[in-house]
Length: 337
Image: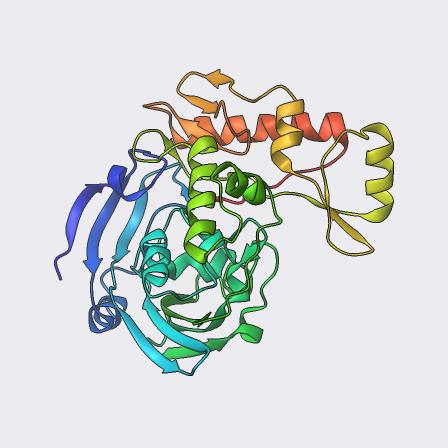
């Protein structure tokens, strides 16, 4: 384990922001993580992994720990289910592809989500009607203050829509080291009704889809809408889809009957943030090297040399405009650093 000075984080964040770490080291084992957290000469520490859900607006005046823990192991297995342990540094999409190769079902709708597995419980990542909590069994995390490994059940994680214990009470207190997922081995339950999955499957000529078919459909849809971070800096969906109460929804739908929505319960409705942003005139707009993607208004992009502040300023402009037009406040999904 080597600690370097003044390291560019350009390749460690999917937005492609050229911020610097005052100190930097790569962590490949639990023992290294425990050791580096004990280093008193570096009182400030900052953890990154896949770098897919953060926007750097400044240099990091701390010891940046690049969490690169690898490995997938079997925890338990029955005739119908399997529980696997996935280390935090495993790329999420590569994990999804690996589960499909084993014919393990449950993650296929979350294909092509950027980032690493260790950050998935923090956001309770999700896509196309499926969230991490649907397959989550537990996770292990190191308490920063004591370097003790603790186990967190699904209940402990307090999952909500892009929310968890690790974003609230546990923020800054733990580093997730691995995640346990429960997946189906047979009689997979497919979720194809959300978004355009059914339509894409029909376009592919598939009437009896497998979990691989669902994954391929999701990949095709995402590629048609979302830019590849390797080609155009972005962090996927920048904003959460707002959830509003029935009373507010009725007022909203009366004024905007054409607006798409998802009924979550008798009291709550989800409005697509991308639609609100597009109707506010931002889709495809560019402000210097910061912009809104031409195919998906939820995605803010870095066309080359945009700073984190320029992207944040654009986000605030969008938030204020959407609120003024629809009286709905959208919130960032991305962590602004």
